Structure formats: C-alpha cells, structure tokens
Length: 257
Image (cartoon, rainbow, N blue to C red; front, side, top):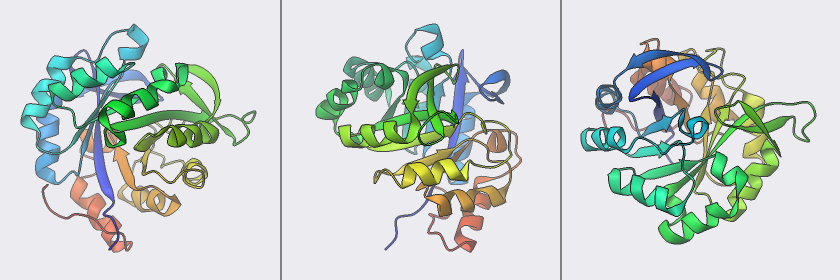
C-alpha cells in the first residue's frame, strides 16, 4: 500500500506571531501560532511545521515558550526549526514538545552536526531544510541559501541534498526562495532534480497558490506538500488540497487527524 501524501501547513513565526511575506521579506502578520495550529489540526493537517524565521538572522534560539504552547494544544506531529545548531538545541526542542527538528544554516556551516544529532536521537527526528534558488552557475542550476534566503551558501542544492541524505537526515524540506510567497506554483524542476538524487522523503515548499498546484508537486517527486500563505489567508483549505490529491490518484488521509 502506498504511503499517504502529507499536507503540512507552515507557521513562519517572528516574535511570537505567525508572519508571511514574499521571497522571505516584507513580512505581514498572519495570526497567533497556537490558534492557527489548533485550527489546522481540526481541519485535517497531517503535520505542522513551525519555523522561527528570524532565529538564524538574529543569532538566537527558537522561542521555546511559543513552541511549548503550540505543542500542548496541537495534537498532530510538530516539526520545529530556526536557530538550531547543536544536539543541545534539539534536546531542548524535543523536551518542549517538538516531534521533529529542522536544521539549515548550522548544517551548512558544519555538516557533521547531522550525524551528531542522528546518533543521539535517530534520523526520524531530523529534517534538513534546504532553502534553494535558481543559480545558472550552480551545476544543477540551483544553489543553497542561508539566513532566510539572504546569503548564498556556495553549495549546489542537489549535491548538498545528496550529501545530507548520506549523512543521515530523515527527510528534506525543499523550499524555493524564488517561489516563496508568490503563489505562482511550486518549482517543479527543482523538486524533480532533488528527487532524482535522494531516497529520503521530500517535502515540497514555496509557491502554492491554488488547489491545482499541489498534485503536480507530488508528480514531480514530493512525498509531502507544505504551504503557508494560502492556508493562513483562507485561499485554500486543507480538505480541498487532499480532495485534489485524491482525485489525482494520490493516497491521502482524509478527515481530521
């Protein structure tokens, strides 16, 4: 039996509030993370991703208090990222209620942190967040960025995904910086390129604008689809995404989690 495609709302959190912008800038308020997380759980989301979007930029840890409040209320699996750089950070987040933890900047800076975390907690808790953008000079045509898309990491996105999978990450959250917040659709070429290079589960992120955008991302190789803007502002409902995926012949979990 095929594994169900997961539909994952993303809470980009800044100073305790959910925000959303375009291409990671011009952030606007989208609500309270606990309230939104609770709503998405009731609507049938399979998981919830919580990203402290300014943690790496400001050099501070993810806000544990907001994570704790969200985890206490939301009953679906919770992935938390932002400013995670060590085994101790992962331990603190898991104790605060996270089910999985996402790393990005720290892994780019020191790839061995991946194996350190998985040796302690297992690879099922570790998600590599790859913020990638189109770059003609990169071998695959896509490069890795850090610090909320503000800096080039000097890494090819496909090669880095392959390396991280070999080091033991449990899954990859692939976010298109170019498409982020644009609602113009997922970067299908990027998804397909990374899918061809890795066997670990792949979460597609960045660009969802319509119900019709999600099934093509799965066809390109995504095991899960993540979105923020369309869910936060009511453009698309989770149930509609799942119905569209089912109509496209993809297995999904229907109803509330």
